[in-house]
Image 1: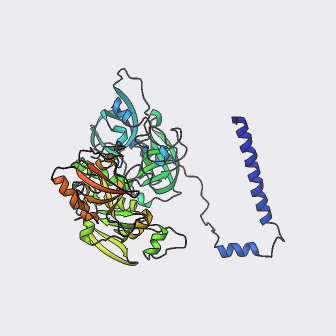
Image 2: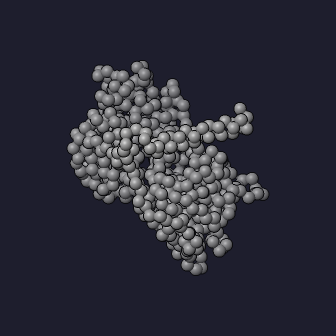
Image 3: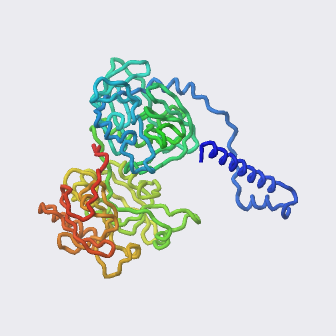
Amino acid sequence: MSEKSVSKFFGRTHRKTLLVLLAGVAFAGTPGIGPSGVHAAYAEDAGAIKPSSPVQTLPNFVNLVKQVKPAVVSITSMIKADAAEGEGGGMGGMGGGMGGMPFPFPFPFQMAPQQSRQQIEARGSGFLISADGYVVTNNHVVKGATKVTVTLDDGTTLPAKIIGRDGKTDLALLKVTSTQKLPFIELGESDDVQAGEWVVAVGNPYGLGGTVTAGIVSARGRDINEGPYDNFIQIDAPINRGNSGGPLFTQDGKVVGVNSMILSPSGGSIGIGFAIPSDTVRNVTDQLRKTGHVVRGYLGVNAQVISPAMAKALNMPVSAPGAPPAGALVASTSPDSPAEKAGLKAEDIVTDFNGQKVSSPHDLAVRVASVAPGTDAKIGYLRGGKPQTLTVKIGNLAKASNDGGIEGSASSGPHLGVSLTPLSGDIRRQLGLGSDVHGVVVNDVQPGSPADQAGIRPGDVIQSVSNQSVDSPRAAVTAVRGALAAKKPVLLRVLRDGQSLFIAISPDGTGDGSDSGATNGGDDDDN
C-alpha cells in the first residue's frame, strides 16, 4: 500500500470514527429516548467524576528560568572510541528495556570533527549543587572519559574532576574549581511531585546550551527495566540528545529530577522522557561526595509479584474489587541475612517499609537500597492474612554479595549468580511435579554469571549439589559454599522438563552444561 493510499485509508477511518462518536452523543442527548431520567440516574448511581479545579491560565516561566539558568552547565567529555561504541551506538546498553526503544542521551553524541580517530567529543548537561563547584550529571555522560570540561552559563569553561560514578542509578558527581563562588540550585522533594504538575527542563540538546522546555509530569515510579533501582519520573517536556544530566524543575525553582533518557523510535523527542528522582540523586551524590562510591542497604529476601490467585490462597484482604494485589511475597530468605535474623519467613507478604507502602518486589528493592547499612527499619507484613510488624537492621549489599553469591548480585569474589526458591505446592503445580520430587527451584539467573554461562535456566529444579541432596535454599547455599571453599567446580543435578542432567559450574565462569549460551553481563559499572 502506497503512502498516499495509507493516508487516504486512515483519513476515511478517522472520519467514520468521528461520525460514530458524534452520533452516539446526539442519541444520548435526544429527549424522549428511553424512560425519563435514565441518563441522570445513571450518572448519579455511577458516581460520575465532577472535577472542581479552578480555572487557571498557562504559567509563565520567565522569572523562574532567569533565576535557575545560571546554575545549569554544559558538559564536554573526551571519550575513548571503544568506550563510546560500548554504549551501543545510541542504546546505552539498553537492549533489554521496553523493546529496545529508549535512548539515553547524549548517545549517539553530538560530535564535533576530530583530528584523532581515537577519541570522541561528547556533550551533555549538568547543574551545580554547591557554591564550591560540585556538579551533578549522568554517569553515561562521563563514563570512559579521559577529559571532562564544564561550561558555565556565562561561557566560562573549567576543567572538571570526576569525584565518583554510580552505574546502577546512572549518576555522576563532578567538581570544578573557580576563583569565585558559583551559583547553585537546591534539590527538592521528588516524593511530593504529582502527575499533571508543570515542570521545566533546562539543558544542552545538540550542543544548544541553555535550552528551556516545559511540560507536565506524566507519571511517577516508572520501572522501565533498565536498572535494579528504576524509579523514574515520566515527563512530556521535550528533551533530546544532549539533555542528559540536566535538571528538571518544579515551579518553586527546586530540582526534582535529572533528565536521563527518552523513549523514541527515532532518537528524537516524542514526549516520553524519564528523569531520575531527586530523592535518589540526593542519596547517591551525598555518598559520592563523602566517599567516592555508593553503598546500599541489604535485606536478604527473594520476593515475587503476587497474582490474584496467590492473594486469595494467602488470605490477603481485598482492598477494592478488581484491584491488583499490592505487596512483595517472600519466597525465601537468605541464610544469616537481616531478614532471616529479624524473623521474616517464606509466604510473608511485605506491605510497608519504614511507613511507606510497598506495591511490588521492585518497590521493596528500591526502598531497601536507599537505606544506609546499619540502620534500623520497620517492616509491615502479613502472615496468614494478619498484619504484623518487625524491626530489622539493614545490612550492606556489597558485603552480602561475597557470601557465595547464591543470590547472584554483581560482586568481586566467586559466585554462581542464581536466586533460589523453595519447591512449594504452587510451584509444583506450575511445573507439573509430583510430591515425590525434591529440590529447590531456580527463580532467576544473573546474566553473564557462571550459572548463566553453564546453562542454568529459571525453572530448573536443583536436586543435588556436589552429590549432596538439597531440599531447601539453605541446604543448597551450604553445599555450594562447601564446594567453593574446596576450590572445586560445583556439580549440580538438575531436573529440567522431566529429564535429569548434570551441570558443572566453575566460579571463574567455565562450565560444561549442554546449554551454555553465555551472554555479556552488560554494564559493569558497580562503583
